[in-house]
Length: 388
Image (cartoon, rainbow, N blue to C red; front, side):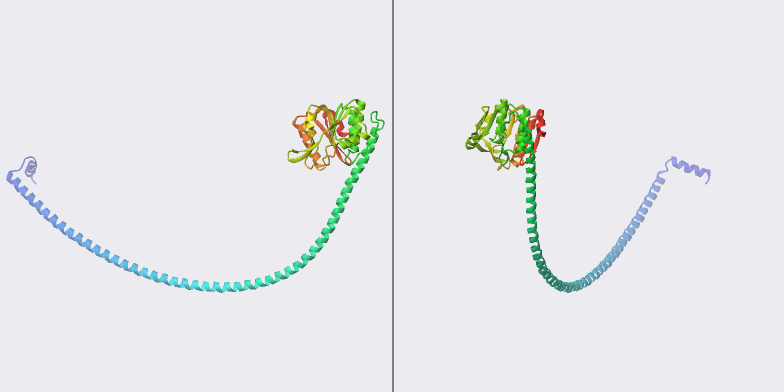
């Protein structure tokens, strides 16, 4: 290309062409655009037909595949159904065989069990028969053994009772000797004709009471029960000018006693009837009627308790003084209670201890045993009397 041609080409870019040239160019451009549109339309039509045909082919292929798969699925289902049917038949046959075998085995086991049961029953019958014979023989031997054992227990109990009695009698004899030695040469005990034992107090009681009277010198004495202890206390009271009150319920016994023993002026009998009253869990305890009212304002330095009757009282016995504790006690005091081998008196004694403990009263206790037991309680200042 020459320089002139290049210049013209450049100038055409800056200067518009002539009108004819421009229209001609426009027509060429329109023709080209129309021709391009026709080609594009033809190509689009061809492509649409091709795509439609391809979609039809694909649809047809998919339909054929689906029909093939459906047929195969039906075939497999039919095969599975046939297989399941065959398996069910086999299972039914096996089940029938198993049931038949089980029925056969069950019958066999039942027959075997029946035979064994019959054999065991027969053997058990024999054992029972033999066992009855053995039991009968053992029962005879056991009866003989029980009889012998009962005889032996009876003998043992008799020996035990006799041993206890002998031991208590021996102890009583010792206390009698001790008592008689103690009162020998007494300045105030002139009449020594005592009859201790049975319902009366024993020698241990008489000995301890003598020591208390002779060494403690009580001034205000309360005695529950008229008897052998009265003979001693009355002589002490007469000699030492002590006040001595005796509680008794039986007028006939009072008349009989006072015929053989004359009480001094300082000794007086307070006659109170007996009655049964409830105390704690005990429904009826024998007491002196109006005892608390009679002695409510008095204080005693020596109290002797051998009444009222308490042998039939299993829970509590002789609780009269208990109802006045500790207000009825002097600062220095001694209390004696007879028949303490019995449960009624034992329970009452524990109640007396509890009454003093609950009021903070310090005290000492002791027990003296012969044919019977007597317990003694004293203030700490007189605790020596608990271990005479």
